[in-house]
Image (cartoon, rainbow, N blue to C red; front, side, top):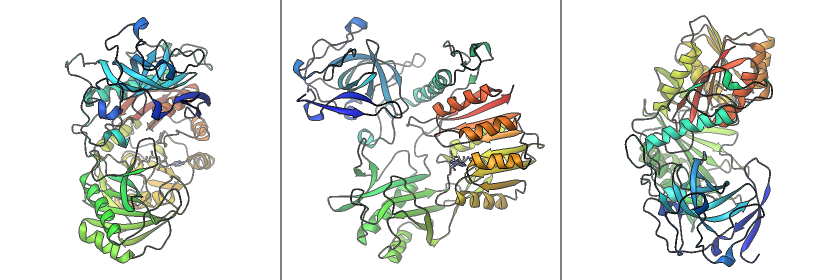
Length: 557
Ligand SMILES: C[S@@+](CC[C@H](N)C(=O)[O-])C[C@H]1O[C@@H](n2cnc3c(N)ncnc32)[C@H](O)[C@@H]1O
């Protein structure tokens, strides 16, 4: 046990299991050259001889492993911690780790891509899966059509340590294909749905007892991507901390709580970078203290900035650990002088020891309480805590799909659950008789009401509260929607909301989702309750990350 840490590791929400983790400082070293484009990301350090090129099941375990005595085994697990293996990558997790197989055992290998054969050193093992650190690609994968390599050099200099993007080392066209496949896999595995063109059959469902594949298969379209998938984010949320007595702001280093200074991010709009830089410089000049997450002391916790491309408006929110900002007026003046486009400077107070960014209290320090942006001809007021999609170019495409799937004639009553600042609701209101929106954040509903007035829309009304509570209330009051649109957070719809939806029996349901696994779970419940999933449109709202958004159309059977 000298070289090992026996650690209880959690596999997300899955059951906990004892795992063997090779301690970082004793991991085997070898001098194998790690190929360019892979090396920095993987931090591979090794000096043993490799069995590069080994292939086939019986050869997948490299026999020339580093120091035999540093390995440890677990009964029934075919690899040992510290062992060098050659493994076939069969998939990719949503956070960009390659899913490898060695003798049927799953190894997660950061930096490896599906289809590749890689050499890696096992760094932890558990009963059902382990982790390995990649050393080199043994067999690359090329796109059959274009004959181009799928692995590309990540353009971002901090890609290795940041963790904000997970797929920069994958060609963009391949990212789009993978995102569609990720959706398909979730729909078949969790949703037990049959997908058109997929050979894999959906399983037997407990409730129906019949094979889902007998039903019309779901159409999953190719992912809608961007022509220029960089510099798309209209919002930055930057944690502030101290390094060597200096205020820094940037990102949490991958796998740690350390904040690393960052001035440029390739998926962020440049206007936001300029504003964050100005705030950091002003705070340093005025010796405003940075929040220390360990002691709970210090003032500035986060700088949140937003940029509205259509109006040029910029907003900054200073999230502080306390109400008083020393030299607050000077801070505001310095920010305004450095970035003349700023129209709103706000403060949000968060004194809780929590990873949640915003606290409950927000006030305007200078300027407007909202900024204005436009999507698809509709104007939106956005306040500091309102949800607003971060990729404006793709948002138009996503909302356009939601409107298309709602198939409105102008006669319908529509409910938009999880409506945020009323964005989808107002898109729908132009084509419906009446729209009801519900959202849990009160400021977002204030924005939604203001946005309706701003656009002269009189057939939309909004309510604050949990959708799972407000919807049954509307049901009791006799609201009978023809179409229900839901756009929940990552955890998906509340079961009580799904139950009410099934009782209300709308003709169509449009499900907008940012998480394919909870989407698939909810689709199964809706299918069991009498709905049929017709088509799914994946939209790439977050290029170079593992995230994918979907818009789904369901009809009553
Ligand atoms: C993915 S966003 C969608 C917002 C909006 N449809 C849009 O596109 O801008 C999810 C929204 O659900 C809200 N939310 C979270 N839990 C909720 C609940 N139980 N009931 C109502 N809204 C909720 C969040 O505040 C957030 O605004």
